[in-house]
Amino acid sequence: MGVQISEIIPRKEIEFSDLKGKVLAIDAFNSLYQFLTTIRQPDGAPLMNKHGKITSHLSGLFYRNINLLQEGVKPVYVFDGKSPELKQAEIERRREVKRVAEQKYEEAKSKEDMGEMKKYGGRFVKITEEIIEESKELLAAMGIPVIQSPGEGEAEAAILARAKKVWAAASQDYDAILYGAPYLIRNLTSARRRKTAAGIYVDIKLELIEFQDVLNKLQIDKDQLICLAILVGTDYNPGGIKGLGQKRALEIVQKYIYPVEIFKHVQKDDRYNFIFDWQEIFRQFHEYESSYNEEIEFKKINEEKVREILLSNDFSENRIDSGLQRLEKIEEGKKQKGLGDFF
Image 1 (tube, one colour):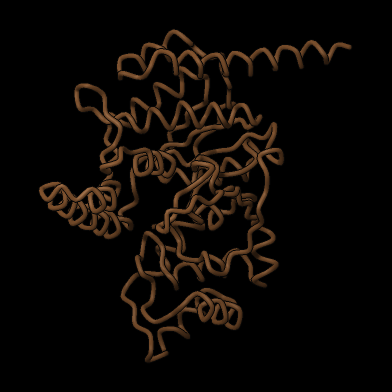
Image 2 (cartoon, rainbow, N blue to C red; image 1 turned 180 degrees about the horizontal axis):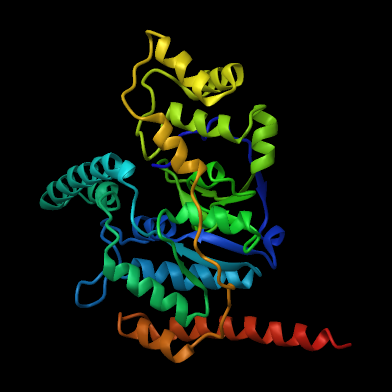
């Protein structure tokens, strides 16, 4: 779900060439959900090996990271740790949504309704410990750095960007901006094209959101931005304050400026009612600290390990070889560039 501020956040379209040579901290769970929900069979079922084990995440990680590396992007994947207690209500809400979707999928399956199966197939995705470990193993074999966050992955990615260990955070959600990421990239690991409900294919463009540009355009500071997000809804208070939209919430934070005054005003207004602890949520975004102090290291690809992982999951040997050849060309390009530096 993430923070519900998409309507008022300024962003601009960019090209992959704008990201060449840049290190990006990718919200791993966000990307895995993308792969698991979109890389699916015509009946809505995920890709699976002959033993019925899901492999959509492996396909996404292998092929889309090859694309990123070919574009000159340096991906770093940041995995979620333990979710804050504040997020439990949202986690429970998501579980219920998935339970209903799975039920509808099974109903459609019993009727052999392919359209409904495809509609609900990606809506009850679960990221299991097995999927997490397999993902880390494949990324490591590809030489792509993996960082384990103690808490929220998007928070860790934002702090890495603030510390200049990476250039930007990459996620579909906007939470990294609330944690102060100087740059947020959206659609980085998405498919380049998407089929609409009308059956038309549209191009998916990269989006760049700049933290300082957001503050300047909205005429607020970071504390006001966090308050704005809390008013309209975050993972820690799903739905925000009922009846309060993004534009009206922006007007309130612009007028009352300070967090205490903002929420004092809202509490006094009979039109609005809320029971969440806004100060606790505010602290979650404001006071998150990273314990990661290692150097980010990109290692050489372990082709034998990559092949072993993918072949054991019934990937086409020809396609694996084709992907590995593309990676070899990337490595050769780096060596040639290195030699060129001496002349």
